[in-house]
Length: 71
Image (cartoon, rainbow, N blue to C red; front, side, top):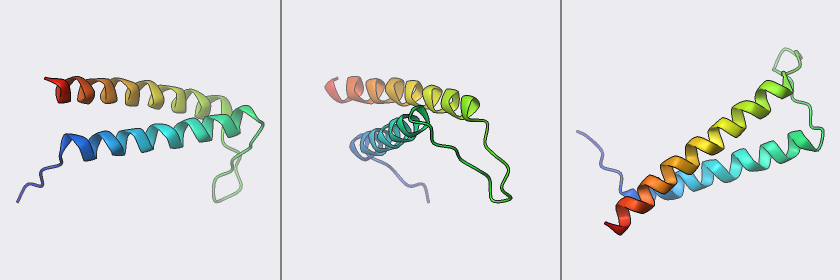
């Protein structure tokens, strides 16, 4: 059985994901260093770019859902 997700709940989920990504990006910009479970350091430049891309994607998805809600 397919589960139907309302645009409003999807919009809220995207907004929350965006806020989390921005928070993590802020921590990286303040010098946070992440490591994998085995102690290997995460490439923070790559992680920062991944988060910036994720925020841009969330911005597009949010704008699309907001526009659909106005139609």
